Length: 75
Image (cartoon, rainbow, N blue to C red):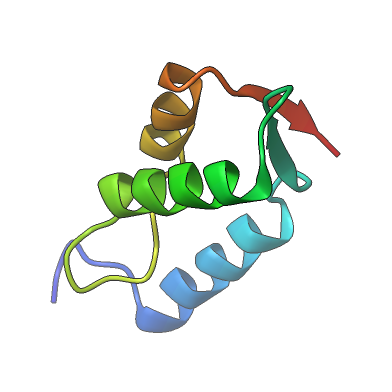
């Protein structure tokens, strides 16, 4: 196919992106119980997911958590 990249190149690019991913991001909210965080995390993951896909849209997840009062803390 003309105009498409070879499968090996796409896999290499995906591996490179994963290797260059930033560190773990944690969302912090003072005074929160574990049950409350777990509920918010699950709801935001569901809202940021794509039907039939296990990956989530990180930006959508961050917006959802931010709207609930969480602050991003990089580790």
